[in-house]
Image (cartoon, rainbow, N blue to C red; front, side, top):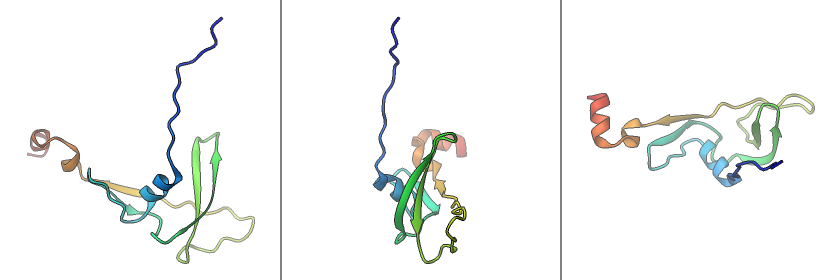
Length: 98
C-alpha cells in the first residue's frame, strides 16, 4: 500500500508576520493595517493552539493593559483595509464600481 500524500510546506517568517500586524503597514496593492500592533511594540514570544489552528504572537507595549501572572493575555484584533480599486484590473474596476 502506498502511504504517500501530496503535500507542500509554506513558510512565513516572523518578520513578515510582525510587519503585516503593525499599525500603518501598507503594501503596493492597496492593503493597509488600520488597527494593529504599535510600530515600537516588543515581540516577546509565540505559541500555537493546534486544535484551533492558530499561531499567537505575544507583544509588549506601554499602551497595552497590564496582565497579572497566570491571567489570560488579551487578544488584539488586527484589521486591514483593502483598496479594491488597486487590486482589480482597471477595466474590471470600472465595470464593478461604474
